Image (cartoon, rainbow, N blue to C red; front, side):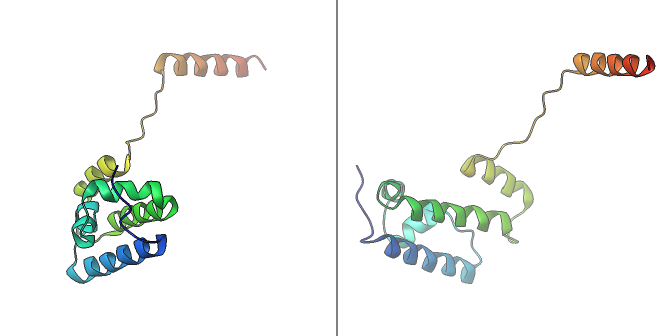
Length: 115
């Protein structure tokens, strides 16, 4: 199992916010690989922080998601691809049974005609 990379949750948060500020200055999209390099840890160690600092880990991921959504430096196609792959976003699909819907409509119209 990977190790605890930060002494406290606050240390984790502070290091991440320094990374975010650097990304703003450099006009870069924050990401886990970039933070891992910045913090001098490997990706597995980053993911292991969830076991030690669950709330901070979730907060870090929320910030990454927010920065992606609100980034003006990347195009929408990349945002959609990244959000689906990194954050589990999905296209909403409604499963509509056209035959049932049509039959329900006909029945409803027929019922209304009886009055």
